[in-house]
Image (cartoon, rainbow, N blue to C red; front, side):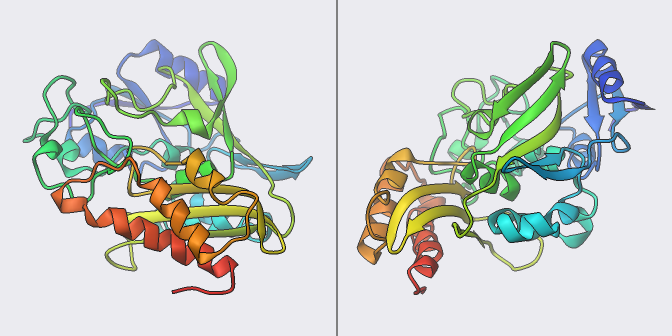
Length: 328
């Protein structure tokens, strides 16, 4: 890690201006990902602007929506009474993410912007197009157990690691930002980009643009919600496969289905075709199986992660099976 300067910004706009003026500057809040990236040499910054004390931590409900400050801690949001009552899928995802120590430090905005845990990206001894564009992707021919079967390209197959992002994707959340050009709103569908030919461009945020708030439309009372994370061990570990489900049901019939998946794709993944397979029909084992087959129809697994094709379908069956009164 090289030497860097550190400052605390008194206001959000000051933080934005400081980072904008310095090409190699970055925001830091909890620091649970950034400091590791700098130690690994995956990122270098000559200036780090501390935003952890800024007044962006409030969680408030109004007009059928929940607004969460980007600097709210993961643990505080997971245990917030409105989140536990109206957004259990979000609470479950947050509690499944990281260790209690990390959750007590990590912020909502930082978690959304954390970078992949691909070991080729985190190790400078291997070529990585995310780390150094144009150098290649060691994962293409390397050990790919943890890598994507959906949304990849010949430049990158790294998986996005955030549990929170998967839940927010299923909830149709948006983020609000403050940047050098003012404020704007970005949907969760647009916040994380597929790698394509530019895997080092992971999101549409401009340099100096700061996430200030996450806004979530509250599902209808009685909506079925669940988050399931399949991992190698029950303690601090990233998802091998995860499923977030939010279903509006009238009796056994599915009126609306929102499904998001982690661990299998280069960004939090949704399939409109898979959701359409459930919509307007009774939720049955046959329908769930059909939904799962559609989800993985375009999967491109490798030898080491072929198992994810079946595992994500089984995880989906487990999640939706609870809504029919049964599970495996």
